[in-house]
Length: 173
Ligand SMILES: [Fe+2]
Image 1 (cartoon, protein in one colour):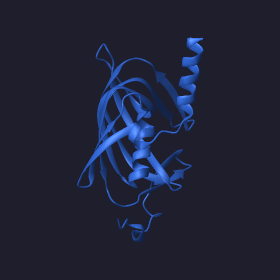
Image 2 (cartoon, rainbow, N blue to C red):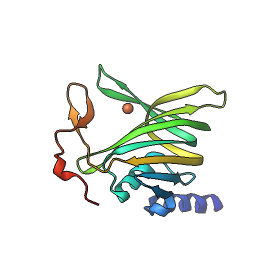
Image 3 (spheres, rainbow, N blue to C red):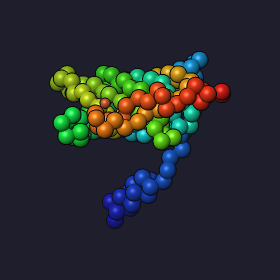
């Protein structure tokens, strides 16, 4: 009975949309933001929420921390498809690096990660999602302008589109 109550509680919690404050805290320094993502949050989701809330339409992100679950993707240029693989173990984020742009009006994050395993070997790849289990310390730089993306049928990926966003869309705030 207790198990059922706990399971239901977990489900009910998962269905409730979170406030930004529940996912991260931050401090702005010029055009940079030092972001501390809360333990047990999913990194890509929290970073995307941050960029949406702060209206960051282009920039870079880097960070360190620790996770116990991560899904990486490997892109095969022949099939133009991703192969996803999930790793469920405690790992150090020795580096997360990525860029911020927009596509179809929404935040588009392109994130790569290098993860250190308990035997000090490294896993690396394109990051789809990762859940923090420890600290999550990130720095985001806001370029202050919009950079969009468009799908390239030739490559099979969403690539930068500098022509699609004229200069007058430069942010005023
Ligand atoms: Fe990538």
